[in-house]
Length: 173
Image (cartoon, rainbow, N blue to C red):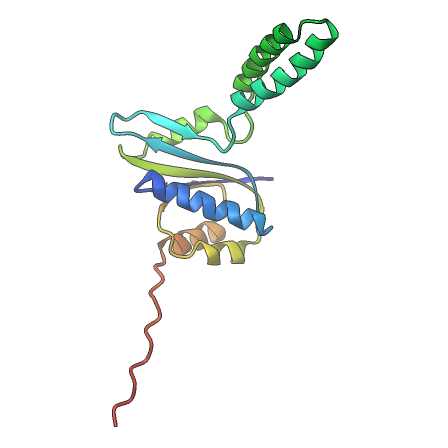
């Protein structure tokens, strides 16, 4: 079972920074994500989703490759490439993996104009290590499917501000 987390940030840059941090935790096998999407609400109130992968482009590239191969069989590789790219792009556009786009747009409507949020679909995580790495990144937890203890721990980790260690003053004789 996956858990959904939505964290609001004051800027798109901060949301992207935290997404990159979480993706680096995934490379360390501390968290397994189903999706990580940065959502931005511009000054006009319009909502834009920054997905990790552009499925339309991926579908077009895959379709073009398969269309070229099929086109070679029928001695019309350019026609096959064009048809394959178009059908792949349509298929990619209609495919929705991870978090439902309409749900993200509806949830992001609570953001203030000019701010951003980060949606995380978490399949598995080593909670104590992930929370330690997210310590003090800021942000406001907007929605989560965690139980109350995990949710409280995440709120505290986001809100905690780490202060730099101050070296002790040298003793004066």
